[in-house]
Length: 317
Ligand SMILES: NC(=O)c1ccc[n+]([C@@H]2O[C@H](COP(=O)([O-])OP(=O)(O)OC[C@H]3O[C@@H](n4cnc5c(N)ncnc54)[C@H](OP(=O)(O)O)[C@@H]3O)[C@@H](O)[C@H]2O)c1
Image (tube, rainbow, N blue to C red):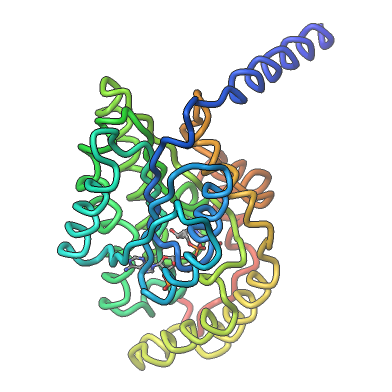
């Protein structure tokens, strides 16, 4: 009986492996537009796809980032500056992409740009910071997608949206999690709506990785700033001791970030080049072996696991 089940499971994985390793043809003629290429996953993916021979259209937030990327890549890679929070910037980028790709259309759109800071308890986050996170991570992603969609439809191409494992289980990070849950919902809706156009949507859900976003000094500085700028009555409710413990746990978490960014960019590359891309890619050991299993547990059990060692606020009732 067990032998029979093991053979079935083996056969399933063998078939899946065979199916997933089929690669689309004419990769050198295919254009891929990536947002947030100044640093981190976007930057690495741009260089990786350029090496593979695809035609990369890399959007950077700053001209300096674009210049640095061009210096590291082939002449085939082209750059544009794009701020995903500005409609006029998105419209200009979409027009530029349209001119670059011509009748071929856009094979791949990778919505990667994102921000996290400050990571704090919801009550410590200012409205301005919360709105900013939503504007970059969610509204910007939706606007870029809708602006590029006619070009992607023409190529019967791919959309790759970078969410987070925090878009599967909101364990930490306040409004950042809300933005990533939004990315998951938008991607699910879009996948169902675009099914008949031959456009495929993949969602990337990385665990914790060391990038510009998780830069220790910047990250901890913003955590501290959020706490210092919180109203006095909020600080009294939570207490300095809770903040200090939270701050130390964030620091420990950052020290544990994976440095192997290829775990994420290989998923993105697969989503763009495989004949049969996956709907969701969870990248990183923490994502696959801790957060995903946790997300399937009953909520009360997940709550217990996630909060059992959390510090207690000063004014507990
Ligand atoms: N690192 C992780 O552990 C992790 C985990 C899960 C998900 N993610 C997601 O992965 C994606 C990439 O992040 P990363 O980790 O590679 O961090 P990163 O190195 O900070 O990359 C984010 C990129 O987005 C750019 N960006 C920021 N605001 C922008 C705006 N308004 N318009 C256009 N571009 C903007 C940044 O430009 P500047 O560098 O010039 O600021 C940077 O190039 C994000 O969506 C993030 O949420 C990261």
